[in-house]
Each structure stands twice: as C-alpha cells, then as structure tokens.
Length: 173
Image (tube, rainbow, N blue to C red; front, side, top):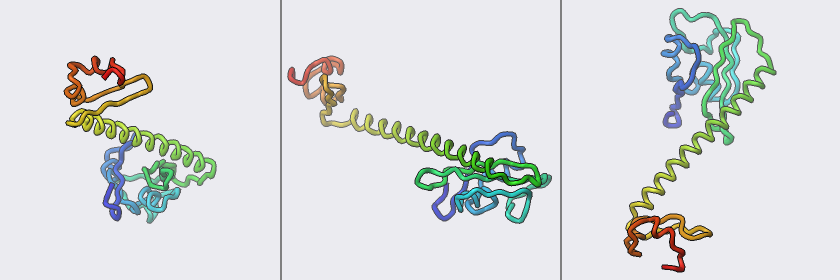
C-alpha cells in the first residue's frame, strides 16, 4: 500500500509471533528494516544476528537472524515478503535460499491468481449491473440461440418472463 513514494507493508499472515513483534511490525515502510529492504531492492536479505540494519526493535527482543525473501509478481512488482527467523549465528545456505525463493514464486502465483479472480468477479458484477439496468434491449446469442436477455428486451418483444424469451429461436421473433 502507499502512494508510490511511501509504500508500506501491512502484515497479513504470521505464525507464532508475540504481541510485541506484531505491534512493531504491523506496518513496515519499503526500505525500513530487513523486510522493507528486501522489498525495496527485490532481493533476499539475510542476517545471522541483530545488527544496525535491524531498524525495528522492541523491549525484550531476543537475538535472532532472518531470511527476508521478496514475493515478486511476474512483472517484478513486489507482492509481499516472507520473513523467516533463524537462530543467532545461523549460516546462510544457498539451497535453503533457493527453496525459499521457489516458495515465494509459488506464493506470487497464488496471489496473482487470487487478484485476477477478484477482478474477474468485480468485472462480471459491473457487466451484470449494466446489462440489467440498461434501457436498451440487450440479448446474448450463442450457437443454439439466446443465452440471456435483459428486462428491456422483454418489454420490447412483449414477453412476460426471461425463460419464455430464451426458449425462442431468433428466427421466431
């Protein structure tokens, strides 16, 4: 979210995080802390322990490291970040990183498909609203005859019900 120059992440999913971290990381600006840097630069960020790049902290925060893996759309847009905590002193592992990037790719596909589905449903609802409210007669014709019509069609042709109209062949009108 954001206006382009001030993008922020909103934490949407998590597992077993305590209240302090949920509060501290509820909204993270692009470029801020490790997750924000992974998003801004669209690259995996790894830290084996807390350091100066760890901008966000809270009272009682225990030593830990991170893999922060950007979730990228096919066009390179940032969709989110996977943040995986690791034990302090953890050694970066190329195979694990490759696996996390593969998981991020799968999540990107799921997110994009879900967004596409939402757009499709919204588009269909808009079409249906225009179709039903139009004062112009609108008929949808398929190979075997009429598939649908709006109320203006029924009025124009003098039919009481949609089923009566749809049961007719266009040549019968």
